[in-house]
Length: 278
Image (cartoon, rainbow, N blue to C red):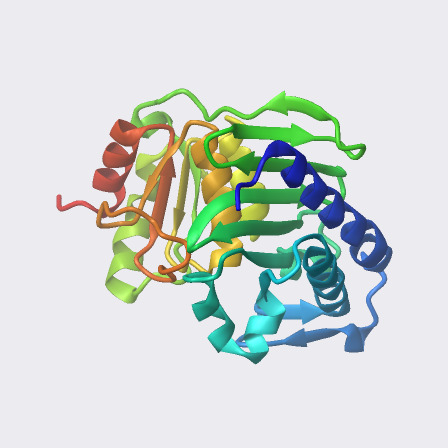
């Protein structure tokens, strides 16, 4: 099927409704037993994640009968769901609360994300901010924009102008990098003008797609964390590729890293500065 702006706005409304019903009423009101750890102390799940994912999955299934829905929390229970992204006629990935550690700590920096796939290709992406009550979204080939809480388009997205490495500001997530790579990258961060870590890919992608940061660097590439933002950044005019320069395919790649920059020349300069040989 082909996604258009009307269908994209309908999904944005679903994320907004789920956020209003299941996420925001629980913000800063979670009982101690409403938060659990998964793979480690910073990999959390809350009642809000699970409840919002259920609402979004039901809503998508009603809007697009027969679609496949691959949620972060559902995949934690059944990892084989990931394989369905490659061949499904229509599939969605959903991260109901990106930045769960922030959410659980009462930090107002989290998002609700989704992306649509047709035969393994990302065709639409959404990043909803429950606190700001607006959504960044993109449709492949049709650009990226922001809609307010009423579903009104309030502005187009455009990445930052290219800049030399020593004037770049960006989010460099080095925590999941292997030892030697981590050591090299961390030691070279002073080559940039500045770095940030929101513990929330949703807002880092929004920052870059809106022209407020130049660079995003990630090592671990779960599709619900990156497919939405990658497409929004691309449709806003940015360039992205894996660490080795190959194209990112969200339905296939969970490793190999990702660098997002304003254009190819900026991507190459950033990669050389952070990963290249001295």
